[in-house]
Amino acid sequence: MGLIAAQAVPAGAEPVLGTWRTGPDSKDQYAHVVVERCAQDICGTIARAFDAQGREIHTPNVGERVFWGLEPAGGNRYEGRAYVPAHDRTYDGELVLEGDRLTVRGCLGPVCRSQKWRRVR
Image 1 (cartoon, helix red, strand yellow):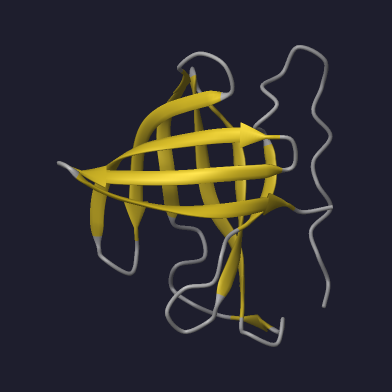
Image 2: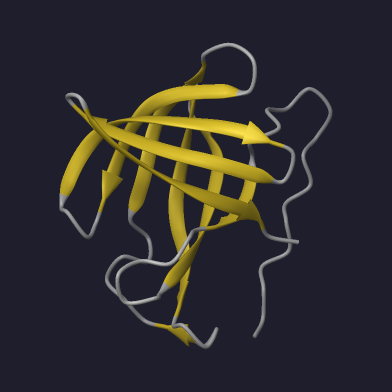
């Protein structure tokens, strides 16, 4: 399985920038999401998708923006909007960075779900 190398983060850049592997979805598929600067904010886009065996697959979700408008919210937290393709819904989103781990959380009213991602190396 080929992996995307983590993008180098220039000095002074946001530490959340780079490529992240999502957790598995209900079909045990996962994706690589590139988190980068988009104008004044930070956004994340699905770059590649994989099946449970790690083979790259083609899905209409590749190229889909899943985070946008992310801004630092103190500490290692970022807040903005999130889109979940499986639900075809947009949520309030939050990222919490802990080293090479990223907790991704989306909420619709009082109902929240989260997932742990890891940085791709």
